[in-house]
Structure formats: C-alpha cells, structure tokens
Length: 314
Length: 253
Ligand SMILES: Nc1ncnc2c1ncn2[C@@H]1O[C@H](COP(=O)(O)OP(=O)(O)O)[C@@H](O)[C@H]1O
Ligand SMILES: [Mg+2]
Image 1: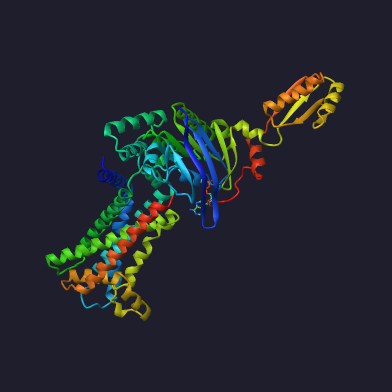
Image 2: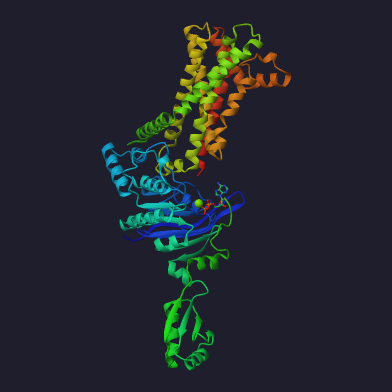
C-alpha cells in the first residue's frame, strides 16, 4: 500500500482576527501513523475538523483518500472515521446500543450490525459492560467505546483527536496497543497529541504544531537531530590522547576529570563519519563513543521556545 | 439506498434514540407534566380569586396554562441538543453523513410528543377543576391546530437555541423566559388590567394573540383576525427557528 492518504496544502483558518491555522502543509502516507503534536490551543482540533469535512478552511486544499474535501465531501466521509477530542458516546444508551446505533446509521443489515457490535465489544474488552449505560463507564472505557463506534464503519483512515488525554497510564497503554493493531491491519491513522512520549511511541512521522504553524516535521529521530544540543561524547584512555584530540577537534569542549570531549553535531551518520575520519587521520584512539540526542521535550522547547506547556487557555 | 429512504431510516434511528432517552430519564417527562399542574393549582385556587375576569377563573386560565406548559417541556430538548453539539456527537453524525434533517426532525418530534403529552395532562386536570369549554367540534380542531402550531414553533426555536448555546447549562435556562412570558400576556390577567408598561408589552408579544385565539376557540367565540395573527406568529417563529437550526448545525464544528 503506497501513496498519500491525506494531503493538505496551504491551510488557513482565522476566527475574526485570530489566526488559528497559518498555512499548514501535510502529507500522510497510507498505512502509517501520523502524529500532530502541539500544546493546548495550537490548532490541532481545528486541523482535524478541516481534514474531516467538518470545517471549511479560509484557504488551502485538502485531499483525503484521493478525494477533495471541499467538492467530494461524501466520498471523503465514506472513507474516514473520526473520534473527537471528547468522547462522543451517548451516555443514556448502553455500550451495545451505542454500537448498534452506529450500525443503523450506516444502514447495515441488522444481523451484520449485531455481529460487528459483538466483535468490537469483544475486541475492546467491553463484553461485561455491554449492557450497562455508557454513563457508568470509566474514562478509559468511554474512550474505547468511542473508538469502537468509529470502527463500526470499517474506515480506511481514522482521525483521533487527543485519544489518550485524561487517561490513566494503563488505559493509555491499552489505547496505544489498539492503535498499533489498527495500522497493522492497513488503516491510516492521523492522531493529535500533547504528549511527546505518545508521538514518539506511535508515530511514523510527527509534525509539530505551534500557534497555527508547523514548526517541524519528520520522524522522531529526525526531529531530535534538528535540535541544537545533539553531540557526540568521546572518552579517552589518558590525558595525552585527550590533549591531541582536543587540538584536532577545536570546536569541542573538554572535561579533564572525565577524560571526555563533547563534540557538537547534528547527530547524523554523515557528521559522525566525518568525525571518525578526522580522528583516524591523526591516529587518535577513542576508548568510548556515544551519540547524545535530545528527547522530544528538548525538541519542543528548542523549536517553539516555550516548552510543551499550555500556552493559552481555551 | 436513495437519499429519501436513507433520511427516513436515519430519522427512525434518531427517534428511537430520543425515545430511549425519555424512557431512561423519566424525570424529564414527569417534570414537564407535574410542574404546570402545580402552577395551575396555584393560579386557580390561590391567586385566581383575586382577579375578576367575568367568567369562571379556570375557564379563563386554562388556555394560558396550556401554552405555559410548553415552556416546561422544552428544557430537556435544549440541554440534550446542546450536549450533542458540545460533546461532538453531532460532529460524529456529520462525518457519517447522517442527514441534518434526520437529526433535527427527530428532536422536533420528540419535543412535540413530550409537550403534547404534558398538555393532555393539564387539560385533564383542568376538567377535574371544573373547566367547561363550549367549543364545537370544528372549534376543538382549531384549538388543537393552534396548540400544535405553537408547539412546533417553540420546538424549532428551542433546538436552534440549544445548538447555538455555549454550554448545556446555558441551554437549560432557555425554557425560563417561556415559562414567564405567559405571565406578561393575557394568560392569567386580562391585558387591560395590567400596569401601563406591562400592558403595552402584553399587547404586542406573540403569546397574547396565541392565547386569545385558543381561548376564543375553547369558549366558542373565535376571532378570525386574532387567529390569523397568532398563526402568522407561529409560522414566522417556526421558520426562524428552522433556518437558524439548519445554519447552526452546518456551521458549528
Ligand atoms: N469557533 C471558534 N471561535 C473562535 N476561536 C476558536 C474557535 N475554535 C477554536 N478557536 C481558537 O483557535 C485556537 C486553536 O484551537 P484548537 O484547534 O481547538 O486547538 P487545540 O485542539 O490544539 O487545543 C484556540 O486559541 C481557540 O481558542
Ligand atoms: Mg483540541
């Protein structure tokens, strides 16, 4: 399975004079997990709404599952499933009734709807709770039911807006497993999150959204490398080797006690090879080498200048 | 499945959902029935004696009570519609291509049924309290007609306002003006017995012609002019509510 499941270019959206999306470009490959990472108020939900036909952008073009969102809305809707930021289950209905309602709205034959509902209840470990009203469910169960409702229609592309916000660590792990199983079946997942760990854990590609702009895009590793602070640490056997190396690698900083040199770099393979070549040319013996890349928290701080905290209340 | 069949099937699904809501939360229905009866007792047995209206007070007050009952039945609709909107339930339906008409019509029908049940109760209680209408059969049809039209108009307005409201809590108080407006109409006191400001207001607000029309039908003295004014108000308000609801449903994500 190849090609793009979602392509967006030049998305803009403003409410009055508040710019919420300021020229967003996205390309999500079929069968992958794409994470849109950003703090509260960054514009994640707005992006999801635009990509899922719920909101018309002021400018820009979106193609989802090969169909233009603006002109082929029906075809797009037939291909996608959306689980919004707030679990949109019907509290007064039971878990099973919620699923059957989805099947009815998809105009599935009764027997098939029942079969799908049973399978989903089983898969999401909701069999026992199936005949209890959703109001009695825990946060994790509601989220699972919410996602199960989205899956009744067997969508090719699934949008998950902050699927684990507010969940306890265990429910979060369960949700991650479910999401991984979905891509394993060939589904494309577009998820938003405020958690760097989550994006790192799940996504093939990550885009970092900050105040309506994409400030970075790439794999988790690519993002980590883009940030100043990546460096190679070299440890030497004795003081002499350290002196020689420090003279050759004049951009480095030395630590005499530890017998180490810290060489700034982008953490990439090429710069590492160059570094090793320079050391080889002078026949310098290195006892130990380690590459230090910042984690995604550092990435966010470096890219946006304000860390991954809430920058604006809704 | 063609569009009309799909829309009908979706309407039925949404109706089933609304019906279940009422059954699982019977307090909403009970409230819609009991509160107006309580007010009716208050008006007729406690306050009614103070007004001289030229007829039995229960005969005078019943049309107003019927209309006022609508205000007690719409609260759950406003909060229900609003929480559908704010929790993303309506977005889910929109992404599933469920027709807008199906969602909105199901709410209108559920609201009308709940309100009409409550109105049936209040009429029953009125009879127990000595209500003696002198309407002929066609006049009864007219009375039912104006009641249904009013319920329709208020249902659409409620749904529109519920869709537009910021939170279920603010949607929940939407019914309050509707419970109070009848007091500032000719529902319980003839307009000409009111103070100057209130009298003007009572003369021009829609509930006065609606209640007068209903009273005219029930006492067998209908006035075509008032009835047309009332019907025009209802149709106008229903239309505004309908268009407003449609627009909000489509626009708000
Ligand atoms: N309907 C709206 N009217 C005005 N401002 C809005 C509206 N919806 C969202 N916003 C604003 O747009 C910004 C981005 O919102 P949102 O997309 O919900 O962010 P996120 O999902 O990343 O938290 C926020 O500052 C929010 O206040
Ligand atoms: Mg959001």
